[in-house]
Length: 194
Image (cartoon, rainbow, N blue to C red; front, side, top):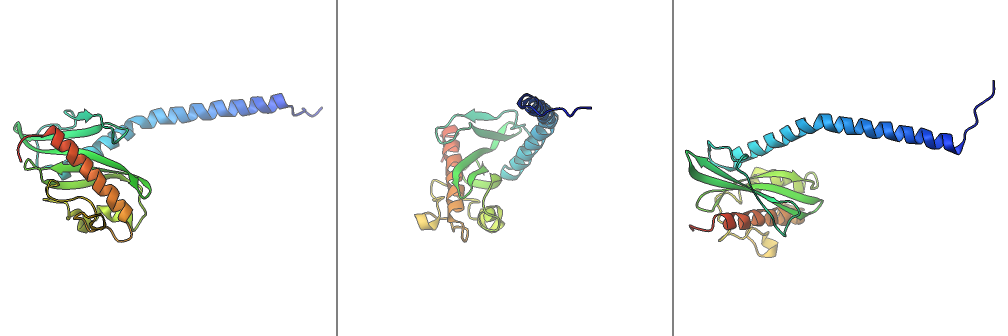
């Protein structure tokens, strides 16, 4: 029995077959997990809406307004909350790519009087123990009830009204920038009333 010689052609074909099988497997797995991932993402948005808006009885997710912006590559999502067809608040997703580790994405809920009801962090990749403290109650409470028209969302180091997270000024700046973006979009969609 003779030993089969390794040839360049045999090695190339083996690599080609392995690549095809691996690619098909990854595609199949992606197709299987696509639905559950989309469902989980939708549930996170619905939970965030419940945290940033007063009680509503419409379906803001179905009525989402998508706005193009030159400040972000994605469309900005605006959710109107109503209770028995009366407006009770607006939630806007703001983002900034200027976080210490990149993207900071938040949902800001606004009351009809244009004050901030609450903010939920949707995505962030900041340094654990520093920038991730943007989710902490002590930091978040600085924003609640404030009207960004009279309250500067920048850190105090930059002439604003926000106490920066200790050791995470860059993350604080990105958070403030995302909140300001959300407010600017909110004002464009709700121009009347002070």
